[in-house]
Amino acid sequence: MFSLLLATLPTQPNAVRLRIWRGLKALGAAALRDGAYLLPSERMADLDALAQEVTAHGGSASVLALSPRDAIQANELRARFDRAGQYAEWRESLDAARTELPALAETAARRRLRGLADGLQTLQAIDYFPGPAAEQAQADLDALRLVLERQLSPGEPRAASHAPPPLDARRYVGKCWATRARPWVDRLACAWFVRRFIDAQAAFVWLADAAALPRGAIGFDFDGARFSHVGARVSFEVMAASFGYAHDERLRRLGAVVHWLDVGGIAVPEAAGLEAILAGLRELHTDDDALLAAAMPVFDGLYAGHANPRTNAS
Image (cartoon, rainbow, N blue to C red; front, side, top):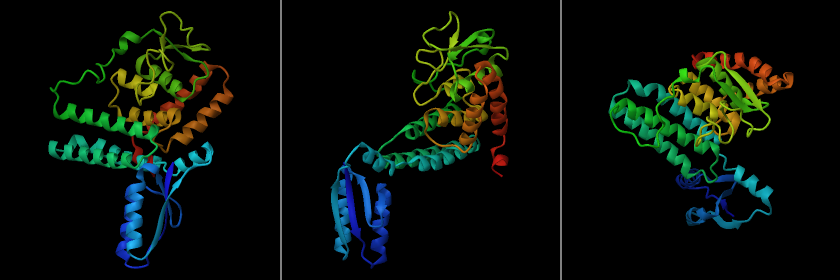
């Protein structure tokens, strides 16, 4: 159910019109057309208050209950509240803070982090139908908060829910790695990471049935695998963090691309290009080892390119 405000705003005074517009924006109302504004039904009282202000200054306003006629229409109305673009803007601020925080004094660093948290809380308050972008943004903020706390209070004990100490990559050399056949972006990124950061000669098994994991093989990116999705993180992000690379900025940026293509969330500019290239490689290579071999330089290029994102934008 939704609430619909139908309003003709008073022509004067301009201050009232501006106040109504700001009120609608603060509530995150969706404009169906000029003079028609939509909110979820639980915010009807807020629309009632705006309607009263409109009529008090000579305009006309009505607040109606709106019920979608079917699931398709309901989804269309929910789509008008999509906040993905706003989450992307918020993460630009977070990315900027990530590079600036190490050089800031403690008070300034904590103030910057509070500002990010307040901005996210404001956005979450009007995200009436949260999805992967909201979950990812919260995870990114929590990760940055942990980095800051480790920087400012290195001796402070950590809660048990935090990530365990990094795994020793040397213990994983010479192992067989296994995942589902016909790998897509997350599985390909994981295999690339293994080859580049753990074992350059690593062998992979591509499983038609994930339940048929070979004895001694290290599984990734399937239910019950040694490395798989954890919370808002995809397998590639989990694997990189598990081996102590959570603070590698280039891997983090690459992880954001993989995350978007695998589960959605906050869009990144490189995602469309990577998706097109990997889709083409899957068409060209029916053998999964050949597919991985072809994808390796693609991920190499993205990783190298992220060393200087400002140059890439020019």
